[in-house]
Image 1: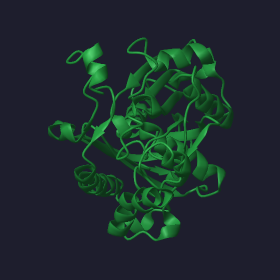
Image 2: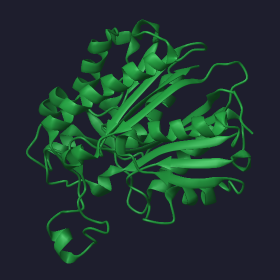
Image 3: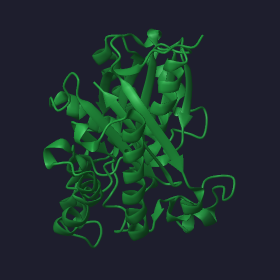
Image 4: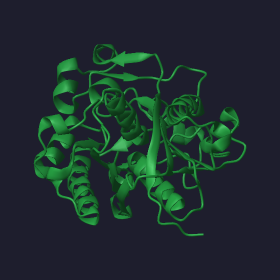
Amino acid sequence: MKSSTMAMIAGTGLGVSGKILTNFDLEKMVDTSDQWIRERSGIERRHILEEGKANSDIATMAAENALRDAGISAKDLDMIIVATITPDSLFPSTACRVQAKLGAVNAAAFDVSAACSGFIYSLALADSFIKNGNAKNILVIGSEVLSRITDWEDRSTCVLFGDGAGAVIVTPSDNQKGIVSTYIKSDGRLGNLLYIEGGGSMYPPTHETVDKKMHYIKMQGREVFKYAVRTMIEAAIQSLKQAGYKADDIDLLIAHQANVRIIEAIAQRLKLPEEKVFVNIQEYGNTSAASIPIALAEAREEGRLKDGDKCLLVAFGGGFTWGSALIQF
C-alpha cells in the first residue's frame, strides 16, 4: 500500500579499524612525502583493516552503533542494503553476512555496487521503499576495505585510500522532516577513468592477471578530478531544485571525501562558507561508499547537525556514477 510518509535518518554509526597508516608511514613505502600528500589531497592518515578481518566485520560494527543510536533491535529491520565495491566475496552478499552477524532474521539483504556513490544510491533506494510503504526499518551501510585492492607500490593511488564503514537507520518520519530529495545518475562511457580490470567474468583471476596487477585500482587522476567537480555540482543543484531550496538554505554540505580540493571547488561554486562544509578526509582518506555515512555519524557526534538543519549529501564514483540527497534533520 502506497504512503505519503517521508523517510528519515533515525540513527547513525561508524565502524573503523584501530590500525592507522600515516603519511609518514607511506614515506617509508613509496617515493612520496607528507607535505606532497597533504597539499594535493588533504589526507594525513587513514585506517587500515587488520589481517584476518573482512568488510562485514566493520560493516557490522557500524550497523550495531546505528541500531543503538536509533533505539531499535536487529530483529526490527525489514531490509539491509550494503554499498560496497570490496565485498567479503562475490556471493553471498556482504549484506547477507552482516544480517547473519546481527541476527536480523526478518530482513531482506543485498549489496549495491556504485563505487563511491554507492551510499547515495542505497539511500535513494531506502527512501523509495519507505515512501512506498514496503518497509519500515531499513539499515543502509557504506563499507569498504580499499586497502585490499590498492597497489601499495603505486604512489599515485596508494596515498589516497583507506578502510571504514558508516551506517544509517532509515525509518518513516512522524513530523514531515527527513529525506527531502534524492538524485542519482551515471555515465558508463567514463568507466575507463577509474576501474579495476581483473577479477570478474571478463578477466577472471589467473596467475597472469595477478602478475599484471589487474586486481588493483587504476585511475586517471586529472580527468577524475575534472568530472568529479562537474558531476557533483550538477547533482547538488538537482537536489536543491527538486526540494525548492537554494544553496543559502543549506546548513551543512557533506561531500564524498575524495580530495579536499574537490570539496573546496564544490563549496566555492555553491558559495557556501567554510563553516557550512564538513571535512574529515584528513583522518580517513578516501573510503569510497563509506565516506559520507562516516562523515554523517561524526557530524552528528560533533553537534554539526541540529534539529531542523538541512544537510546536502553529494558524491561521485567510478562507473562513472554520481548523486545527491537533501535531508532535513
